[in-house]
Structure formats: structure tokens, C-alpha cells
Image (cartoon, rainbow, N blue to C red):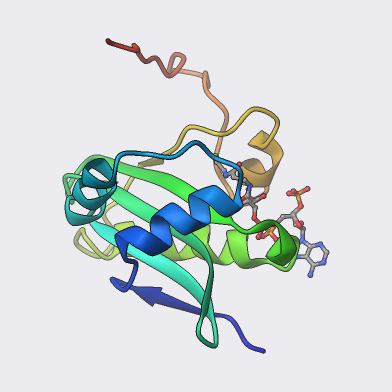
Length: 139
Ligand SMILES: CC(C)(COP(=O)(O)OP(=O)(O)OC[C@H]1O[C@@H](n2cnc3c(N)ncnc32)[C@H](O)[C@@H]1OP(=O)(O)O)[C@@H](O)C(=O)NCCC(=O)NCCS
């Protein structure tokens, strides 16, 4: 059956279910709801009535764009769904700015998945003129 990418249909329950199917730890429902509400765009990869993957675009809609929560359930991997979701997120970011204006889409790769993203056009940091990505965990 054909895969379709749908924008704005992802529910908190589906988000939580996809995380569980990918072996990821449970998150507080209130945080999942807030994450979906505050995303610039959410995408679901659907096959008939089943949601088999997702991705979110987070940012300010102008200068900062982050691809996050790219997930495809294990049985549906290696069929191009993750790539299609990634391309859809990048195109959605481009649609936020005037034609011809470049956008920078950032992401944090899972360990060992960098090759998946470089194949799709992302560059690993640091690159010439730009240092490493950095972050802080705060409790
Ligand atoms: C990362 C992830 C989203 C990729 O999803 P996917 O649907 O398997 O992605 P694709 O099918 O587009 O590409 C996966 C691989 O299959 C290959 N592939 C794509 N279509 C294919 C096909 N028809 N036949 C064979 N291989 C194919 C791709 O070349 C790619 O190879 P690579 O991993 O060496 O780059 C998925 O593995 C996942 O959900 N992982 C767990 C969560 C995670 O790590 N998310 C990323 C966080 S940064």
C-alpha cells in the first residue's frame, strides 16, 4: 500500500505510540501535547489507517529551523520513508521564507545515523567557518 505524508494530523497518542514502537522512553503526556502544539509543523507517514512514521519541524519560522523526532517504526524502515519525511520537513522550512532566501535546517543525529543525513544533503559540524554544535543538559 502507498505511503502518504500528512501534515498536522499527528495526535499525542500516535506520537507516544511511535516512540514506544521505536523503543524510546515514555514521555509525560503534557510534554508531548505541548511539543505538538508548539511545533511549526508536524508530519505523519501514513499507510491506510496506520501511522508508520513522523517528523517535526520546530523553530521561529524565519531564521531557526530544527528537524526533530524523525521516527519510522522498525518494520517499515529501509523503504525511503525516513528520507521522504526529511525532505518534506526541509521543503516546509523553505516554504516559510521568501523565494530565493536560504534557510538553515539543523538537527541532532542519533549516534551512527550521520550517514543517513549526509546522503540527504546535511553537513556534519564543525565545517569551515562554523564550530561544533553545542548543548547543555539542565536539571
Ligand atoms: C533513522 C530512521 C528515521 C530512518 O528511517 P527509514 O525509513 O529507514 O529511512 P530510509 O528508508 O529513507 O533510509 C534508511 C536506509 O535505507 C536505505 N533505503 C531507502 N530506500 C530503500 C529501498 N527501497 N531499499 C533498500 N534500502 C533502501 C537508504 O539508502 C538508507 O540507507 P542509510 O541508512 O545507509 O543511509 C529510522 O531508522 C528510525 O526511526 N530510527 C530510530 C529513530 C532514530 O534514530 N531517528 C533519528 C534520530 S536523529
